[in-house]
Image (cartoon, rainbow, N blue to C red; front, side, top):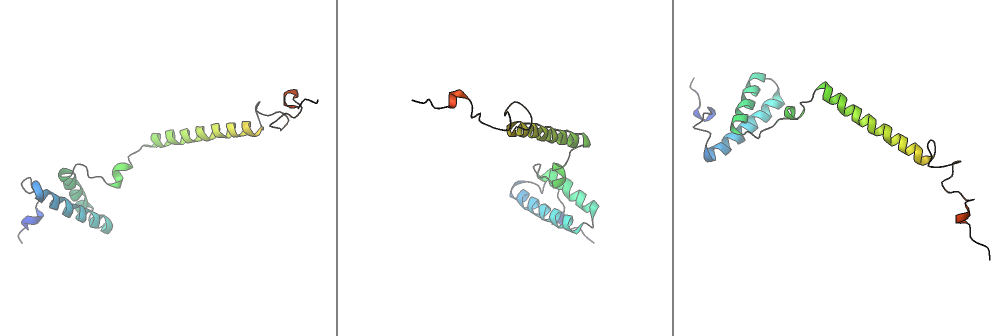
Length: 118
C-alpha cells in the first residue's frame, strides 16, 4: 500500500496557496473526527498538525482551562456582589439602614415642605 502524497503534510507542502487548502482539509478532518469520536489518536495528530499549520487554531478545550481555585474566586466575587446588592436593596426599601424612617420615603410633617398659609 502506497501513501497518498496529498495526505502527507510536510514543511514543503505547507506554503503559499497550498497552505490554505491544507488548513481547510485539516479543519474538515478535525471536525469530522470530533463528531465521530472513535479515533482519539488520529484526532490528536490532526489537532497538533493544525496548530503547526495555523497557530491561531483553537478548540473549545482551549477556552476552558480554569482551575478549581479560579472557579472558587469567581463564585466568591459573584456572591460578594449579590450580598452587596441585597444590602443596598434593603437600605433603599427601608428594611435596614438610615434611608427611611418609619417606612416612609418622604416626611410629610417636615415644615420645609408645608405650604405657607396666607
